Length: 182
Image (cartoon, rainbow, N blue to C red; front, side, top):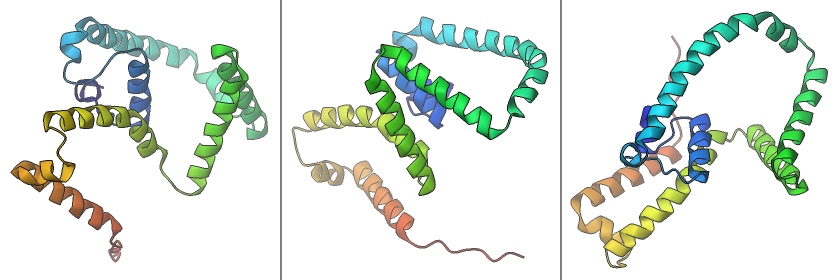
């Protein structure tokens, strides 16, 4: 959690969703969060400590009911989960649009899973895309609207990073060699 909050780069899909929620509330994560929102960081870590202690005791109390709940057949469990998702989506703003949106993203996730497209990178792209756009715009203003290629090639570090990105892209397109099993 600390690297995600301080660097602003989520390490997993749930952390990306958490950072998106913070972003929706106007809390910008990154290196300046410890200066701009120090109370929030202490509150988060204190809450995590208390939550872990509480979960330790709750886990023992809920073991038997959880086993019974998860041993239900899928034919019973999935409609209940779907109904609760519809209720949760509608209860947020009391608008049918939210249900359509939930249904659309559910279909998108379903087809992505069928096509073996990982969902995590898409979530990371949605979360990090806004930061990338803002910082790219800022860089273009700093470098007086030169083309991005001029900015990267004129400086040694930029040229090295450009070469690394190009090599990584080319490497991802090459077929993978399978190692023989012993």
